[in-house]
Amino acid sequence: MAELEQRGDRTPAPAKWEYASAPESREIVNLQERYGLFVGGEFIEPRSGEYYRTLDPSSEEPLAEIPQAGAEDVALAVRTARDAFEDGWSAAAPAERAKYLYRIARILQERSREFAVLESLNGGKPIRESRDVDLPLAAAHFFYYAGWADKLEYAFPHRRPKSLGVAGQIIPWNFPLLMLAWKIAPALAAGNTVVLKPAETTPLSALLFCDVLRQAELPPGVVNIITGDGATGAALVKSDVDKIAFTGSTEVGKAIQRELAGTGKKLTLELGGKAANIIFDDCALDQAVEGIVNGIYFNQGHVCCAGSRLLVQESIYEPLIEKLKRRLTTLRVGDPLDKNTDVGAINSRQQLEKIEELVAAGKEEGAEIYQPPCRLPEKGYWFIPTVFTNVAQSYRIAQEEIFGPVLSVLTFRTPDEAIEKANNTPYGLSAGVWTEKGSRILWMAQRLEAGVIWANTYNRFDPASPFGGYKESGFGREGGRHGLEPYLDFDGAEAFGG
Ligand code: NAI
Ligand code: MG
Image (cartoon, rainbow, N blue to C red; front, side, top):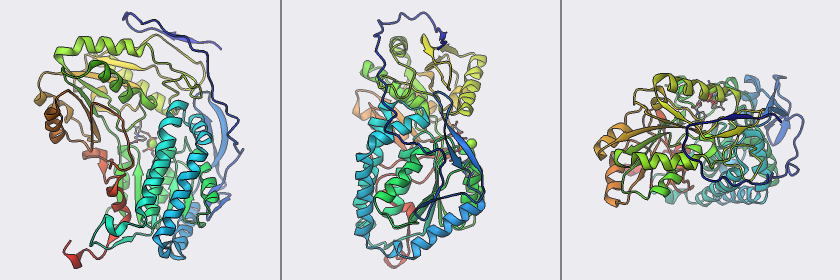
């Protein structure tokens, strides 16, 4: 296979270990040539009659044909979910709902290798991440909400929580199964039924999940999975659902909010971010370097809470950047199914083009680019882990979400300046603070406009911890007790003055 070589600047590279490739076998995954829509517990042909192809982004190899659900298909799925809600699910004993959620969690654990391989195959993420992060967290989410299903009265004392009905859920392609878990687990725990649409580039793990639902003997129609692109999503927003939960771009989030204004349908939005990862001069430098790398190169930087703006205190700027560049030379970019891979394939051609456009803008605006020497496969969608220094706050690479393995470095002198720069963004999803001083962590956390703030770590998730944004990063929380609230009505609230 012909290979392309690119070189960055002259930072001395540490000795690089050569690894023999260690690919995870694809055998465990059984792909169908063509899938159906999962409605009422069965795979059915789309009434639209339309299909598209989903790919392996690391090779551009077609994997399967996927239905493009039309408005009629969406309406059928929503009606089916409504019937399932009225015909039993809403009246089921809460402990029954918990039983199914526990079953789903256990089956995900049992089949985790199969799901991890499929997730990497269809989405391009390293198998190490799908195996060690996406799958354990997806199962943990179902276990966690299974625990709440029969304790809603305790989660919201004196407020008489009541399920909403049908939840329409639209998810992105960066954590396909994990976002499905974030959406479906609290919705079911709160007694709703669901119509979920995975992203067009990564439908396969959601379709395999339908098999888990059947194995768990979840009553038909309680969860329905429909595939398709933005048009299918838009049809779901317009349909007869009681709530929309959306994770994706700020642009689409705003359009959904406009569409739903005045309809009385509930809405939660989890949108983009441009998080500041803030490094103070007293921090443990080597650990911070690991946190920076994890913050921006994890999942190819396709992470809404990625630490994409690095704010470094001036006094440690040079040693830190030197360490960071050296660390970059050791990152292994390549085959997502290889267990040694650190950075996999970019999810789609469209996303690669967006990254390339913003990187070109960064160079043009005057930032200095560093990319380690790196060989990229000839086929598929790839981008070398990149660091931009000499970045001004006004540059597009400091303002816009790149959603790729690209870090923009800025500097600051005082904590006040760090806060001012960190908050100088329309987004407010997450932030990181690296310092030895506990009091400074708290001082910073009070002033940072971000839903999630990590201290001396980054990209750490737990189902018990609420996640969500400020400003253009959206509203509503997922995870924790907070994550149940958007799936409930509280009709007894007045009686208690609450
Ligand atoms: P997108 O927002 O278009 O897609 C996300 C989901 O929304 C997909 O399931 C898609 O089919 C659906 N969708 C698209 N248009 C819709 C509409 N009009 N109504 C209802 N649903 C619709 O995001 P896209 O185009 O894949 O990525 C563009 C940028 O968005 C990325 O480069 C990144 O900056 C950001 N993004 C942020 C995510 C996050 O986790 N917050 C996830 C994905 C993308
Ligand atoms: Mg889009």
